[in-house]
Image (cartoon, rainbow, N blue to C red; front, top):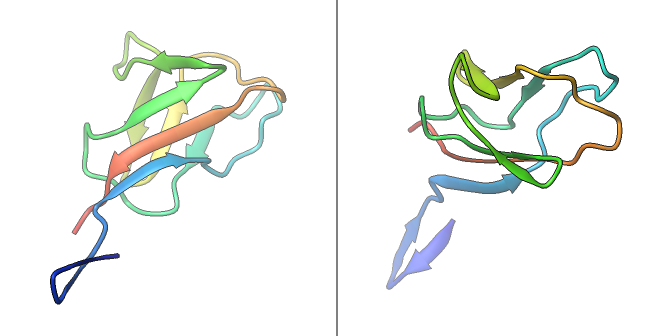
Length: 86
């Protein structure tokens, strides 16, 4: 939350969150802390911005999961930014 004047405004954007999930060359599903608005995710993996979509790098699954279309290695850094659901 942040303060604007005398109002306490809830944060609606999450930036650079490290999602939970095993990085073991088998698991491709990672979970965010909060539920996100569909199509609001921005994902970075291995230092590269990844593209959303079935024929691209990842898809959103449910309200808080990212599923990659490629192998995730133990050394891959994953960051997710998104708009929180209300």
